[in-house]
Image (cartoon, rainbow, N blue to C red; front, side, top):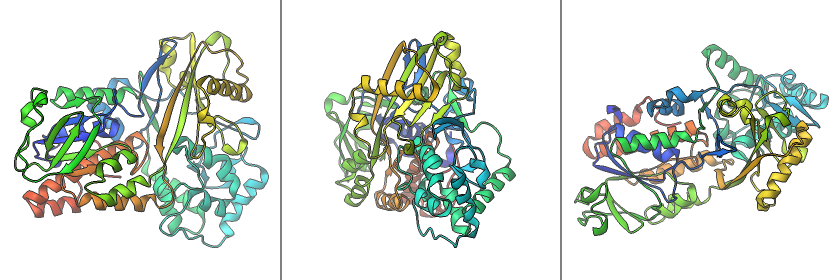
Length: 514
């Protein structure tokens, strides 16, 4: 039990059963709260989705988590997945550009090199020469925020952005590097750029700090059977400790109430929480979901920005307006299974594709080569994935599934020579799946939290705020639970609340925020 994050509330409702909502529920139970998770759809996990193809277990959503941040791996261990954590079988990848698969450069920070030589082979001689001009250029001010692509292009030239930064950031955000906020997406680079005139010098400082810290261990981690197992394991842990999880329960109303005494509607009183979830004079929130009315002490809203805006519109129009301004990108994943005897792939875990090269797919993962457990389950089957769709692209995502399979096969043939027919295919569409972090996103999140902070017993978390990766979502959940703890202390013990604000708690999941 994390006594230092105890909320001491009787009941907390978590709206949203993705990894952020489930992580929040898990941590709330650690702190002694009773928890009800309400998920609008008929499944848990959000963009983490386990599946299978040709008898092989695979991920149909996100397929790895950053291991250099502790939150996601720590959560996986806490819910019993320690023995199933897996490192990639290969860490080498390629970039398909200028007509060939080329080894992914090393010695860069999200595509930004410490010296031109690091990008040799990917950039032209002209592009490499342009990087070297960085040391002689006058200072480029970054202000409160700046687009990654805009800043890097001014310092190092567009070719660095177009050939390397675009595919790397596109793989994370499905966005446009010339719009993506450096402060939000690459904060360490933003801070270094503020302190240095030369961008390459700033990168070398980041690299020197990393070397001094002697970071060891894998950069990424997976889970045998797929990282889609993580939210299911967290949900099992929540249920095992008395938490309630309700599927197909879209929330239609969220509002503050003072002194209401009615309980849940009669037909729900015999449910898992039953009449014990009824309201007393100290209840502060009314939640309506699928005909069920719950009065609760606190609420965590862990849904995408648009859905959060709909829920908060009545109580915080200012927060809702900011949330509605968050844009999303859609994408699709195409999973293909082949007979091993019919194909020969290049070595490595796959490749990225710069948009400037005019291809349709933006990346391909050689899943059976990247994750040993896939190959072990059926040595005769090889699984690949491709992805299509970036911010602003609509035409490709409007195509039928069969057409997406065809274009994936075409680009795979062009890149690798793969010409065999797959034995099975699956297309998984993630409409509005990835929030965009344009310039000003950091300030928008600050404003959202300021507005939400005025409502005791309410917190928000998820991919729309501090990062789209699994560890960032878990950290966001941790911060939401900490906010509820502070709200409780403000009511019971203001000095203790002030101390907690000044010195945020740390849990085994990670920090109190980003």
